[in-house]
Length: 155
Image (cartoon, rainbow, N blue to C red; front, side):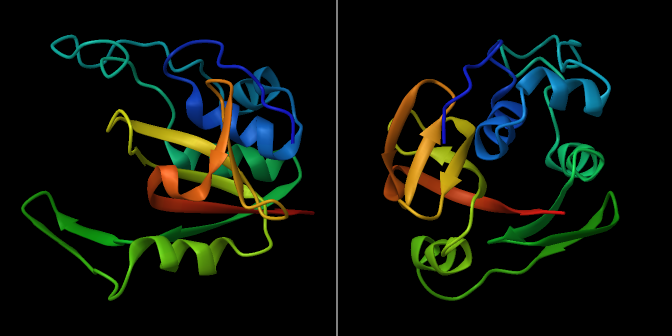
């Protein structure tokens, strides 16, 4: 894998998919149909005020670009109405859950970094068990607290 650098602070999700697939990040952003820059929460600081990119819209764009994406969540949730929602929590260690799910595959992990405690997305390389961070770093799997794994399968 070769890390593709962030074009801006709110593009870690498409940039991580770009790193994991080798597709240029701008091509993924074009397939999504927006650049994530719209300010939708003016009361929040950068980059949280921006629209950014939802995993679901990237998954749809990746199909157009020749990939099927399987999504695995540690805490899946359902929303029946805005007042009625629930989640399922898996038993056991979160890191072990994701190590098993990610085994021998390439994809994208979304979660919280342990060092800064910020929501972030990174590419994961199954053959080396390494994280490729769009901020320019390569590090071990255990430096992120994963919430979702997007496993990539090329068509």
